[in-house]
Length: 296
Image 1 (tube, rainbow, N blue to C red):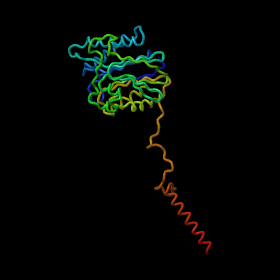
Image 2: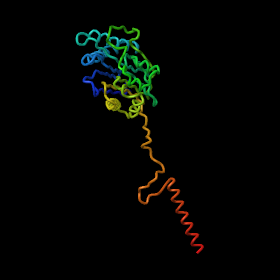
Image 3: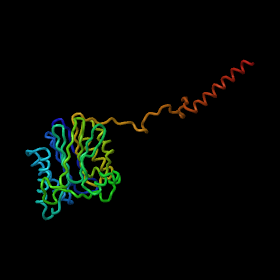
Image 4: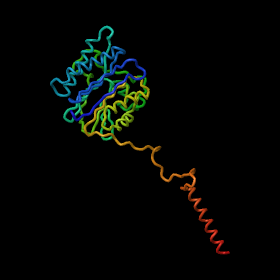
């Protein structure tokens, strides 16, 4: 997929000491991955990196896009479980992967990282959050802002690496598939972004896209840090060959005023109601002077 432009940015944030997020890009073959480690400190980092390494080993094997993604995530899951001994016991991760081929995107997803589709000025979340709060938000029982502030927002009931799995196990890998047009874009991200920025705020930043996906990714991460930076944050942005950012609209504060009254400029002209009264008085005085001169 040489026509795809992509880049990612990641940051520890302003509170955490370790960055447990990882990402991987193979734009030439249309593969994109974001991983968020679970387990704290070194364990989370090891789980995330193990997932990336194992995923890379398997994703290009034979099979349909769905079969390849299921096999790669399952391989990552079982590799993490096998290595989770001693200080690493209990480590796991959540992840979102996308495979773009022949005008389609196949998504493999476990946990509460996310994938968004941006197309024709709209943004749409294509993954489900595998968490109690995420289920309530997806069902419309919680507004987006309520979910972002919920005390249980970081709990997940699906993860990669907590036990041995098979590729077709129930309630493990969520697979989605949808068309991907040349004028569309994708955003894969960890919850460090979406816990702090609404979908509308994300879209506003993506709208600035001017051909540099690295700038979009960096701007998203910076915005999350400016909003508090309470977690590791990763943004991986993928733009189709014909994707263009939406032109910004002037806000009310910057929109040019029409018929503004200039009251402090010497020799300035009056406009509006004050102008009507002033010019009416001037005309009245002029007519009075003309009539008085005629009588004289």
